[in-house]
Length: 406
Image (cartoon, rainbow, N blue to C red; front, side, top):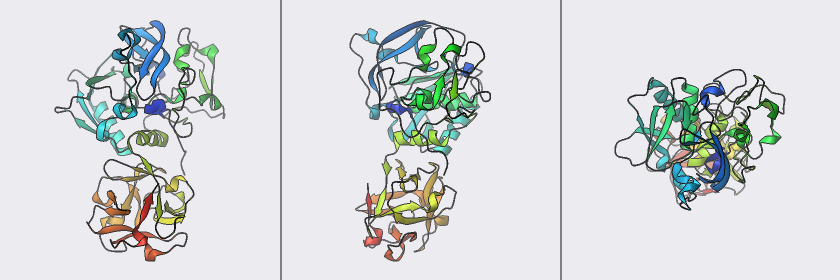
């Protein structure tokens, strides 16, 4: 099973979904700044943050913008200068309805292909979908900027993702991560258990960028285990004053962040924001759960019933489109083999593709396949033995087709 990951996320877990990535390789942190080469007034104030409520945070005011942790823009409407008008956003408000993000690519943005490629990457890894804006009131605008920056989560109205010419594919994927609700991984409240900040190497005046959310007065934002490989993680040399690492791993590993793609932890984190988790116990026996055989995330791995144990093999994300995405790998969906409708066809996990073979409806304790109105998720021969196969069968209301979501 691949690394389990987290997130500080929308609840600032982004586990809340940036300078990125890999110490020594990948995109340099310098390309992950809203205003490269510029510094501003350091301000500590009470600010409403999406998913976290009103928090005391330290940010920089640069060119009239409020910048947190280098590339996160704060909504001016949330700043304390609005005389008490700041209000905390709820998680539901900060998320994009229907897990769908309308967007516009500004005509002045060079190399718009980096945006469309980044969007395709997000769609291939998660249940999030992006659509060109028509009349939607809330949407993203990808536009030229002096650096790479984004707001976190949905604000309401037009919100910008700024991309300078040096903001490549990795940076674009990263900034979209902020826009859908993810914060920086290395700011998790538990980060000091996993990384060491070399304060002596940090540029003067930039130490506030390394605050944890706990140090800012917030807790409870971390989702899942710490993810060294998150695309939302600073690289090892972020804000370095002397070319030496500002961040090192406690386990002695060398890599931080990813070069050009979402980690499994990133996809789990994003999915956690938009798709509720679910487990399913079978009606044949209350201690038998829908399970991916051997906890194997490989495409084609069959499902079965197994003793309920709370493992990732028994944990699913229920997407707004009716997919059941395995937490073993969120781009693996519960799938009817080859899209067949014959009774007894095995159910497995397969790369998520949006087909009817991967869409399910939960109704009255039954899990119905979109392949046919009368095809249900079924335990073969109503067996209770560990490892009994799961298949589709004619819906009949039997215990073999009763599933309790919990």
